Length: 246
Ligand SMILES: [Zn+2]
Image (cartoon, rainbow, N blue to C red; front, side, top):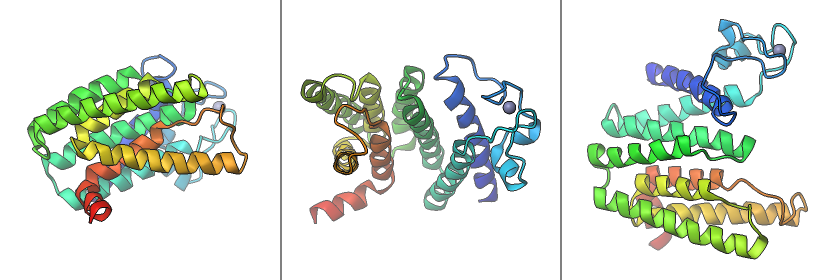
């Protein structure tokens, strides 16, 4: 377990780099301060220990490392630990941990830049097809059907949304993310994932609208709702179905 938690922190550090470098369309490079551009010292490459020993400021300009970095490292350690506890050292654990890593990366780019990149979603889809063959947590028919259903249903929602509130609320990135989630959860479970995403996204949007924190025209990133719905369905799909339809 200690190794798995440690691995989660290290993978989190890599995801943090990719989350900064990929949207800027540059190859991944060593961590640097976004304010003064100086290369970070080695003890800040993984930021969680740097925060713990109070070395969370850039040594040359004093800027604080964004809190996103330790949160992502801590979050992935926790999620990896949970998956290991639930599935043990199995192929399913390996693939679910990879899916979790990809979803974390998409969460970062969607919240910070409102981007869901093809360079992430397209390989993710290929990995999910491979995962369905290798882990056997669902049949390849169920996986492919889930991917197509996720793609088609979200495409319909995006077209409807664009027609109702104008273009820009959701885009092609969300559609490909839904296809990836469909490949991971399979059919008919993908319906549950999308339902959870629509319910939670709708509830939060409504809350923000009613509190006048956002207007209808302000874009809200919907990727995180798809991701939370998809991840929960990947892990607890059967339980959620029983609970909804008992
Ligand atoms: Zn600096």
